[in-house]
Length: 202
Ligand code: VGL
Ligand code: ZN
Image (tube, rainbow, N blue to C red):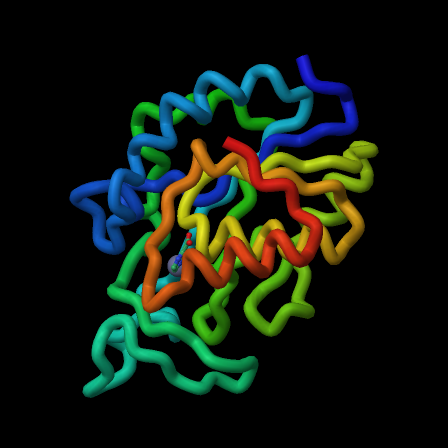
């Protein structure tokens, strides 16, 4: 068992990010058995769910003429336009059925405001609007977090960088993550995480 101060955070292990899903990550479902073997070793366990309204600004279909995976300027910065995914209440937004979601202490939903995306579990993409996760972890006395899930180069990396910036000791278990890897985004994310002092394991 890990010490009381150590939380496992499982990012977005949802059907739409797994093979057959709307924004499938190659081999995304391979993280499920790895996470299941880890989760009950942690005294604090958080699952996140990407949870978008159908009119979400990150969906290419909500920008007439825009191609999926193109980038637009939003008031809060550049935003990749994704295929519609993880729409609230749909099967695609549900956790992968094999994930041990019963083990979760907290399920945190993010990306629920139509006008702004939220890759990170800590802040929306303006990097300032909090999700509440920092307060939850601090209230429980958590000082160290291990991150797993999907996708390594977007929601996992943004969460890891924010956690490091907030002063948590951060480990990313790469064997329990899979990447989208859009135009070199995986290599860039790994470099940024290393530079921020994130421990990359597995
Ligand atoms: C994610 C793209 C869009 C992720 C979520 O979970 O990494 N990526 N929404
Ligand atoms: Zn999303």
